[in-house]
Image 1 (cartoon, rainbow over the protein chains, first blue to last red):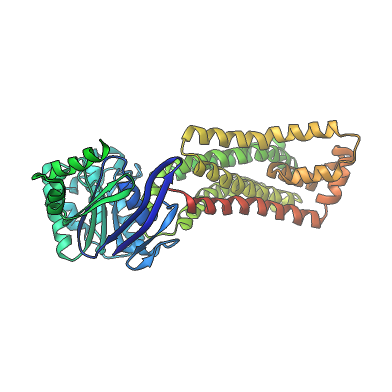
Image 2 (cartoon, rainbow over the protein chains, first blue to last red; image 1 turned 180 degrees about the vertical axis):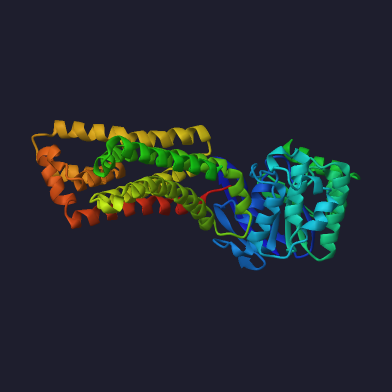
Length: 235
Length: 248
């Protein structure tokens, strides 16, 4: 589904990605983990074409994405920080995105799933962080695209919404979709992810299942296994 | 946000047009007064609105960037939205009072349309320049500062430097130099273009005669308009080039 070859990216003097290679197969949930500032969001944004890499080849669905934009029709992206134009109403925003995509969408179900009905006519600037994140989730999941990219989807969600989100991810996985997700909540990752991709110092440090990771680090607890990588590598 | 301010801008020009006509009681005189206002105000408004709009719609831009839309269409669309609505406000706001006053019966119709055309060009040029500044500066305060400085430079400082150089090098023939120097500043170019069309070049003395020879002819008019078009296209092209290479 996604191939990344020797990807380099530098922001001014800050070298974020140094020759990253990654191959994401079709179908399944892939968790991209790593310490703060390890380049998780940058990697996702490069795949989306929002960040222009210094060098490297990225292809989605077998085709290079350089200077292309139509392939984004097949990707749903949930940004890390829900920055919406504040003067729009929730309803208007949903309609606008639907107009842009020109695809069938299932927003009704998602709106009731997250209990957003009472907020539809409210302006986005008046919403709380968690509600904004729910709107963000509706916008992401309302289309039927084969690739879903979620950057910190759990931020600000209440327990009910959290459970709904996990169900939603499982449901999309059943349909054979490829889902990339980043999160710092290890319990969430352990529950939803089929494979772990661990980023460290601009490269892929580990790629495999959670069991492999625990074996490799001699830990019985997933959270500790992740912490072990981070501390031993930096010590 | 954008539409509300362009209404205010439109009403301002509407009011300005009526007041000037009322005070001057003559279309050609009103055109001269208007020119002085347009030459300074239009670039300023274009610059400020451009920067303001760009920074205000940052979130919106980021949202669009993840959608299946070409980058150049996002930025061109935003640019045309701002420049287009400002131009509409200018043309309609000034056009309505003058048409009501009986512009079509007056002989100033050509001067007036030239005024509107240059005004439209100035709007497009300065909006494009301000978009470029906003795109290359993440920091809002810095972006605003640079944009206002650019306006100040082209509207005032450039003229000062130009005059100083004329005084320092007065021993030499300066006709072609001053012609070229005028070309490199869209504000000066528009001003000279309108002034000479208004037939008051006699006030400008010998240089005025040279200018008249150049700008007064059809050839000069065409070259000046071409220069204005170039001034518009270059920043737009630069905007597209930059936007393709920017990280969000």
